[in-house]
Image 1 (cartoon, helix red, strand yellow):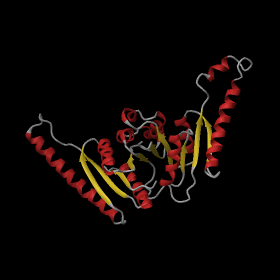
Image 2: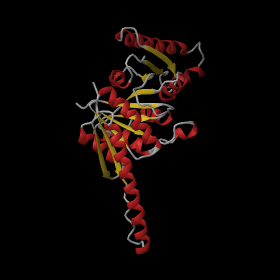
Image 3: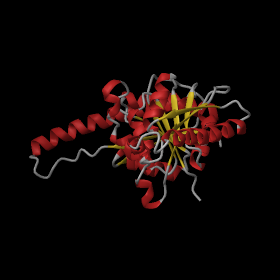
Length: 297
């Protein structure tokens, strides 16, 4: 499915600029319409603020608003100069709520956001705007990290548990990469809950290694089936461990620039309970992460 409308969060920060650069690259790739969304902050003074301070705050607020207006207009003109259709939506409210509302109003297929912190310990501090947007979005969400790149991705890694959600994430990946870019997949396999306790009984009483062999064999069969469905061109790496930890480690080791994975539950109350694997991966990944939501039924 090609992208027709892309929402890009724009708060004029460095992470926001990174997200917009990537959004421009994807818009060029698909000739998509790009909608810059800016959440206006409320600078209304408290009722307890005296008149002098209120006047000063008002002047500062007006100056900030004027500067934002100039810079937003400049961003919009820059994008239009590339021959892309671009519009600006500027509304008051919490950024994640403004972004998700704009995505619904515009019928967007994708929201692109930046996040503060992308290396070392700081990358574990997922920005609240990115987290809130992922949880409440009506469409796929791309959280951008890395260097400013005005293009599609070149080395994606798809996390798969061989579910329907993972299959859709894999199918969506081609919409986000440069033509001919190789796609790889990883599956994190684990022993059944409680298997670790079998080692206390000893190999003679409970040959737990047979359980391990059976689980790995089943995972390998699923991986072979998935690879065959893609003409044998898809490499699926099998790694034992917790899914989020495995995915982020494999992505970093392989120098992937994008992780793609599905989000479980996106309608009604369930959409507020973003799968822990998706949230943890976005929080800990060193590269950009695309969270693919299940298509509405």
